[in-house]
Image (cartoon, rainbow, N blue to C red; front, side, top):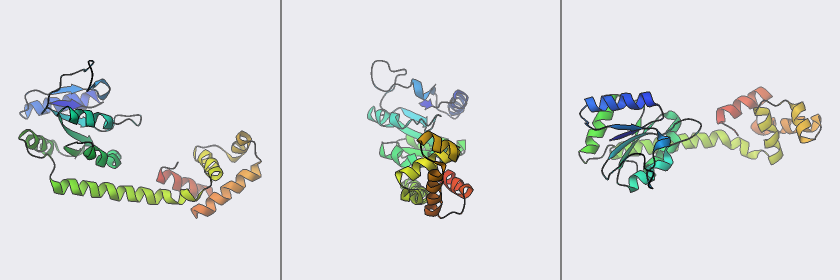
Length: 213
């Protein structure tokens, strides 16, 4: 069994706990050191090996590209994800992960899932898989609804508003773009109108809530 996580303390603690739970051989590895294909493989993996892998590991990086090569090698992959990684869980399953497990789940439930998997059963029931995918779809639908108002902005309005969201003052936006302050304010007023808000503070709050741009 291999535990892949960017946090060495979490990975080693989990490995120790899994050994104590009856899994005799548990190795750990940083995601950046895992080479699945090629001569530079950093650890020997064989068909049937279980790989418990954390989905997110900082700076916007994910271990999603590792799942398919691991599955192609015959490994059985379980992904650990937090709420932040929810939009990617459907892709994890699509790429062949046996299950996506909540990082907040109890250790006992994790062990139960891994024992089922090592016994040749599914780590995730069909009901759990369906519920997870439905949760992902609801999340995606909510995200689309939050971002929909911004699709009405013209390219120039979006540029001006993105600069405003980044903390650039209207005077600076005008200077950097070679336009007048009145032109910039005109763009901002049209943005407020299209977003159906009464002031810049509400517009900025709306953008941050939607994760725009």
